[in-house]
Image 1 (cartoon, one colour):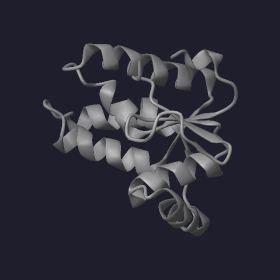
Image 2 (tube, one colour):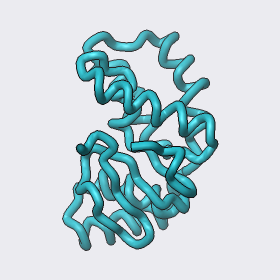
Image 3 (cartoon, one colour):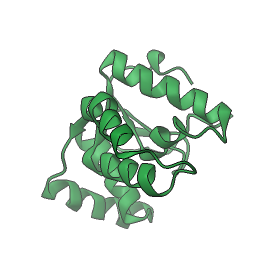
Length: 146
């Protein structure tokens, strides 16, 4: 998948950022690194505070080789902060509840979808949800799907 060919803003789910650090899956890592790089270079990639929280938690506790605090601080400043352009409001949670009701998604997945919709993204890049599914003007794409 070539993000530079997509128009408008796109939302990166936490799993994309995690795969960028996952040396156990080199094919996915290469794709994820390119997606994050393009998000930063084009200024069209967006994450929410939820993604920041989930990534930092995983980096310290779930990575095979956890990131040090110093590495986390650097990644926060260099990658997460520049991409973090969405901060949830009560309407985000309300929309997430409606998405759960409509789709059956888990609440935290629906919260990611709600953030992507409310931030004006046309695409949500994630491995976790149904590839090709549309929710309003948002299309969910799995960049690792063949």
